[in-house]
Image 1: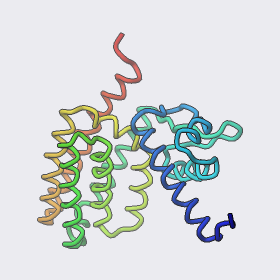
Image 2: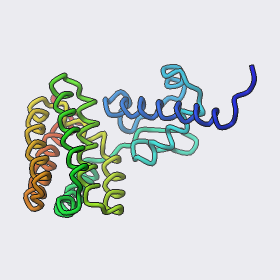
Image 3: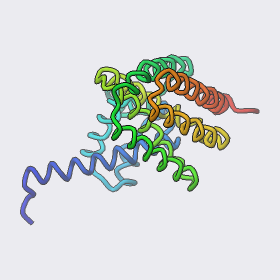
Length: 229
């Protein structure tokens, strides 16, 4: 068989790496690859049916997201943060959302607001279907889109990077069904405030939503680190 053309080969490698990134990200969020644990290349190449090349490309992408660390002579491992480090990151994220709220209401377009509302409906559908992973992905997308509505590239960039770094820890709180249902109602209020361009109200709703979720998540994480005996 003739060799693939260079451009086609690169395209196929890119698709493979993208698929691997998505799968490993899901495994990390679901706890199948625990924080601080070394990631077995052999396990993943066999389990995902890929070679080491797209796998290592995926590790580099996940490292930029803060989910993976590549340690010399040891390979890749899942990033582990202390509760104090996550606390500080969550403070920063809440602050960034607060900064973005009023500019988002002033500068956001009707098309952007409609996209947020449509994704909210998709998120509600995931919640009703019990699709936790789908719900979480859309939830994160909605928050990033609201920040992006401020049309401040620096703000969007910092929020995206820091949000990715603690994504694993934020996911834990969504496993609590009571919080899941409450979060949907809070999102309805957030979407309404955005559409009505009520900046100060949106700022307070985002801040309350953020810390309500983090309180639940922190309890989950503390229980998992120090389970009842």
